[in-house]
Image (cartoon, rainbow, N blue to C red; front, side, top):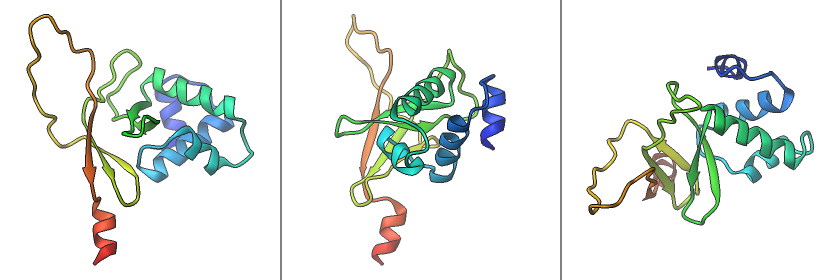
Length: 140
C-alpha cells in the first residue's frame, strides 16, 4: 500500500513528515527505531515531529510497537486489518543477531500459554532471536 492510501484509510492529514516516515517503513519492511527514522530523513524533520508522527501512527493502527531485547522501542507496520482501537499485533517477531533487524512473523502461529488463576494478560511480546534468511544467504 502507498503512504497516501494509508493516511486516507486511517483518516489522517497528509503532511510531508507522515508521507516520508511511511515511505521508509514500506521500503524497509523491518522494525525501526526513532533513531533509524531520524537517520533516514536527515535534518528534514526535527526529533519532536518524528516522535509525534510515530505516536500518531501507533494510536491510529498504522504502526505497532516492538520491544527490542535491548529495551529500545521499535515500530513496525501493522497488518491491514489493524485499527486505532484494535491492534492485531500479537505475533512473533524475529531479531537477527547478525544484522540486528527485527522482522514481523505474522504468518507464524503464536505460542499458546496458560497463566495462573487471578492473572489477566493484556498483551504479550514474542521475540525470537537467531540469524535471518538474508544473513544466512550472505554467509554462503
